[in-house]
Image 1 (tube, rainbow, N blue to C red):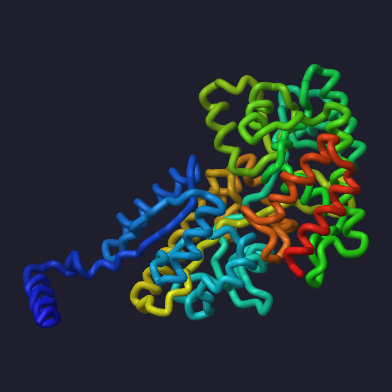
Image 2 (image 1 turned 180 degrees about the horizontal axis):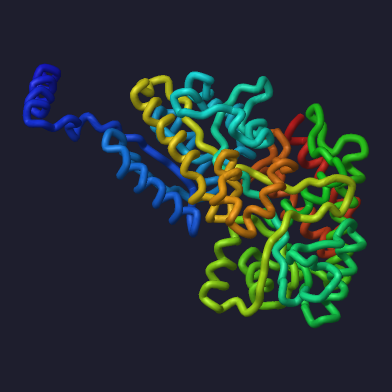
Amino acid sequence: MTGRFTKFAATVAMIAGLASPAWAKVQVEWWDFLAGGDGVRMKALIQQFNAEHPDIEIKGTTLEWGMPFYTKVRTAVAVGEGPDIMTYHLSRLPLALEEGVLSPITDADLATAGLSKEEFFPASIAAASDEAGQLMALPFDIHAIVLYYNKTALAGSKWLDTDGNLTGLESVEDMTELLTWAKEQGFSDPLSFQTAGGGGTWRTFYTLFTQQGGQLVTDGQVLEGDNLAKATRAIQILADWRAAGLIPEQAEYEASVALFSGKKSILFINGVWEVPTYKDQSTAGTLGFDWSANEVPQLLDQRSTWADSHGFAIPNDPNMSQETRDAVLTIIGWMEKHSLAWGEAGHIPAYKPTVDSAEYQGMEPNATYAVLAETAAFDPRTRIAGVASPVYDAVDNLIAPAVHGFLSPEDAALQMQEQLQSLLD
């Protein structure tokens, strides 16, 4: 009876001139973890998509970032109550594969989305794929750490070139010289980052570690061979800077941001997501100095910078209709092709046509540091790494204390090796 009534109602609607009756709209359940400026921009993109697509409606829900989000996804997907599409950190992909929460994205899916793998940066596609090369998510951005700097304070020094970019930083010794000079100029904490632990300490450590060619996990073994010595060296560099008063003591995230904006630090290592913060302050005239951001310099053996990606993933739901899946793929394709707005949040769009566009190339400092997408060092491909993982616990319990002199770098690296290995054995 219901089916006959629906057909009758649709016929009446068509006779009345309504080409797309309201109940024919595909509703897509969307989950993300995006707060702050990222959340504002994503909500604006969702609104624009909905306005342009009368046949598809994104119903968005924002959940708490980190472990709460991924726990919710795991439990919801397990009982068939997950969303139709969700944002996902690609650093969490190995654990997602183990949990079986993601649906593979096929070449046919890409065609439906109007996309191809070749249109994305290779590093982000690799991070979005399983070991066999099967795509499990679509990368939306590459968000890395960059080096923010006070251009006003560096003006006339040997560390600023004629284009206003940092120069002359080709070794740890070069960086130490600049920081020591800045200390003498009255900057109490010359290089700021989140030194108390957490993401900031991990990202800085991992950049120095991978600049030595370090690999956290190889063939299931943590810090095998000379990787232990490389981890020790990375910790030692940070500990030496702390001992010399060149980085702050126990700075939490918010404090590390304030040290740079408050002219206590001449340099600041943080994610590209803080670019809008300083752009807004500059526009409002509240910052008090000129600034910019460059790729973290190569201080050791090779160019490398910690990075992660926000991606779009489809939960593993065998009951999802083809109509809903096609709508999800339409959303993903549209979002990728409108990622210039996401670039305004500081992120490097993973979709190369956006980065190559004249609009993005005119966006500074974004266009300058976008080169790091070619040498981005994603978190190790292991279930113990990634956002809100045991690696973060090791940073809080071992690396940060060693940086602050409570543990030797050697002991910290060795205990990190032992603790993480026990989780893989």
